[in-house]
Length: 303
Image 1 (cartoon, rainbow, N blue to C red):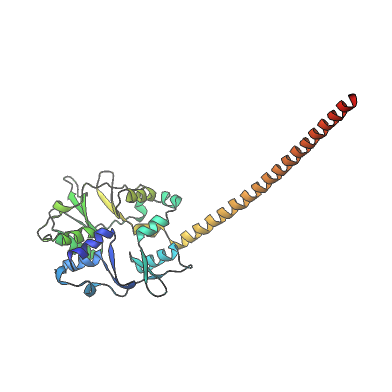
Image 2 (cartoon, rainbow, N blue to C red):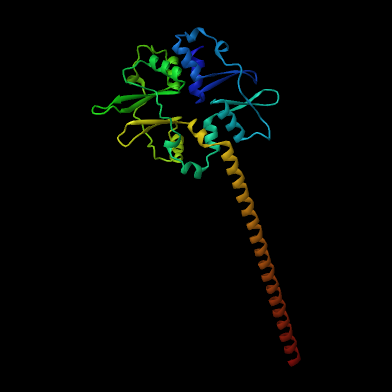
């Protein structure tokens, strides 16, 4: 696996690369796969992509019957973050991720009514600043997480205070840069400073922050700045329940139908009023013409 192939993750701004033969999907390799290979001490430059891809890929066939809710159900059901879309001939058309779902299904009122604390993960994998990047990769693989939060411990408390973060994408980039991960300390390469959420923040605020930065995860801190949780794009899938969303869609459709019916009734009443005014104007015009004609006849008689 060459450096140019690893750089595809950063170029595509995606957490996976799809491997194809022409348009035919052969498999998928994710940032998590790269991190796992890293923990095994695998020499990525000596490995071919075809040797490490996942070939049995869960896909969604493109059709009129499938929509964003169908994709959401599959992501939740299989606990995956990447869902390739194929046609009837298994040719690749595109891919759906939790970020896509979050962008498409963003019911403002639903997200505003829910707090970050309701869906954040409180089991945050953490490490100290002097930990090696290789040890962080091992933590990610062991706990099946996409990041490690770098913390400092309080002087007068046992609380941990977040000061940085390292993600799967960072690990892939470090590999492409050919860094010695065993000798590189977290504090030298972590993303810092952190802009943290509060547990009481709404999910709508979290959604907007992810869009503006853009990032795929946000650290959650308490009133004293202590680490209390983490929110990822996958966290939003817990809120966007397909059944609840279907109910929301039906309710919105009913509202649209009711508004359409009401608008039609208003238009009908308006048209009646227009017709009535037109009739009055026609009658006034005829009366005016008749009056002018009478005046003209009278003037002729006088002459």
